[in-house]
Image: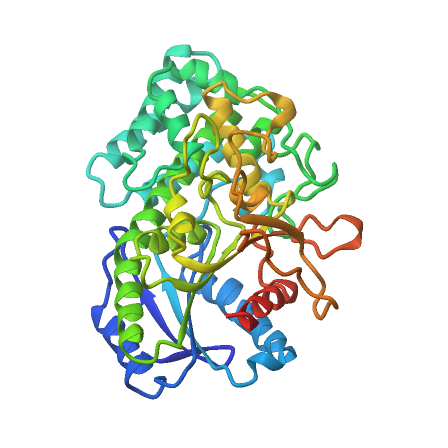
Length: 461
């Protein structure tokens, strides 16, 4: 059914966890609209995907409507775009909220000294994530009985970790250079050793000591206050805080896998059919893919599956949740990143990547996984020189085709530097240092500065 996001004609494309369209009629309706119907003259079609922490309503209200609202404000600033028109294909896939305290009404303070309650709530959320898995209810129920014993019983720790790890899916399609190695290593270790490592306090590389966790709600607490728990439990340490971090790693890993499946199957098939039809008709029309968070992994998986003779025009990764080595030709020992074909076969004509050290969610996830396998030195945690680092934290690393630029204010003159010397990927630094525009958190992406940067890329396409 035709809808609109900030005035742009749009269709909502819903996929299940296996990447199957929930209503294939909507895909056909969207194709007909843009290829032969009222939208056949629209010059630019944008496929966009939300990430974690989104249900359908959240995706609409916190990403799609605000982002395209900013886009509608910034695109008129470009004379080159005055004759361009835009349509939207909004992707919805079954992601789930993390159960870390940032997302719990009342905030982390509600769980200070009550880690059992937080862990129990996290197991409730795992039940939601693995609905349909016939073994999950029994597995999670067994893990729940172990919570009171975790502090004192290594045997309970071993069993708790083994139960949670058994829930994690076997990785399919492209691996993640940080997470898959960690989960493979954890499967061969004692759970008590894993929790001991996860329970050692550590501080990720962040912008400043007073940086707020979370999305700006009252639940966000300053790092180092001693009250953080859940995902960030390792800030203060302890076995049950470590168990909370493990539960969130399971969630993270599962969402990573699910996003890749949806991107590589349903979204890739739809995008390829759209590109094929455009190639047979008006080849001047453009297709762009935008993904936030795990949606960044979703759209990268989709583009990676496309035939190189039908590239997308632009791919935009907003605080993407996958390894910062994913696009690299060689990130050590001659190993290419799992998505290297996107670059090597130029499956996107240009690529824009936002990143920020203020993105705690991505900035903690990868070093936390490496901590679980005992591989990261504290001085390197989460930064660009860490083998285990996230795209949304550091941008594309070890990728010769990428240049690093600071996010600029809207209307900056001159604008972004032209690509040269074989570069065509722009890493946009949103740290906000020296008064520059700041991406303040993982979800802080519906910003005029970002849509203006996207507009600048559109002027050259």
